[in-house]
Length: 421
Image (cartoon, rainbow, N blue to C red; front, top):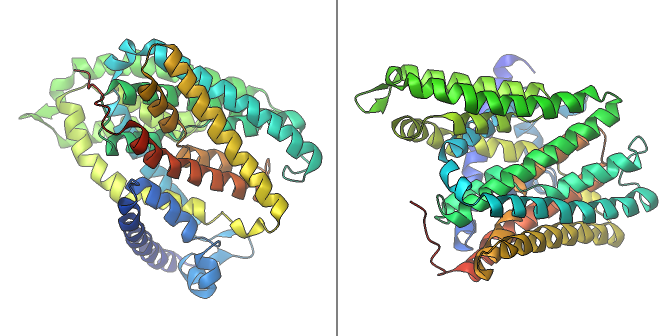
């Protein structure tokens, strides 16, 4: 396919993706679901599991398949565009992150994070033992330890960007509950990505990959918060004019975000962590308000839905074609929901939060969607998991995310969460 044809298809894809996301969003909003959940469902609906079954010729025309390379022709441009959307959105999330509240709720955030890691990881590792010994859900090249680490990491995931959007949608941004959930979700995902680095290092028989990923992340965080943030504060006047961010200030911020995303991606983590940390390093006040107002509409409305569609193109739910496979999918769902939800509730309640607040945090932490899709896409691409297990994990990600918002609304409606000043 030549460059002109690629451009024609890309614009057609954008139109289809955005319109479908909004149509599904209208239905989702009536059911109390945020737009992000609609985008996640739309991604799967546009893939081979639904659109490809109803109208295979039209679906293949919009999202062409290269039979020679056994990949989507769209990968060369849809994938980078989707990654840019993720990075920009996480940059905004980082700028909205309330470090001051994290300091006040540090004990609860750490406790919730540890519980949100330990319980689902333990249950996921036990489930992987059954799958590895008695099924073919893990390819022959995946060892038992790699299977346990990968499935355990998949269960630990809290969809950090997804959680942020649900918290924003529910009006919890800046509250103690919302900040504890965001802080714990960030720690959980950092741990899960560290586990993924270990799995990939073991898979490639190169342990320097894990050392580089984990050590590089710590070094990057120290530089972003200890070096970049003070410099930006010191020279803030050069980035602001007449009470707003200048064009030069916007360019500098986007360049720093891109460098951060590039660095964390190059060391084996994901670009979203570099973008988030650089957002957290931005000086609060005029700069963050100006940057958010310019970046967020484009990232949320245009670029972020592209990721969900890209991931949905790899999801083949039709592979789960027997009662036994669907029973395994149910086991994955139960292990994920129970391990994460009850573990986080117990930790939050044990650190002094009310039962309602603790239950709210447990429900919010069960939203896995976006980061789950990222990590399992890597597992599928690297041959760590089968397409069947990939489909099961996609279903788990969708259902746990779908559950989070309505269950939270039913459990915590009218509780009057106090907003920190």
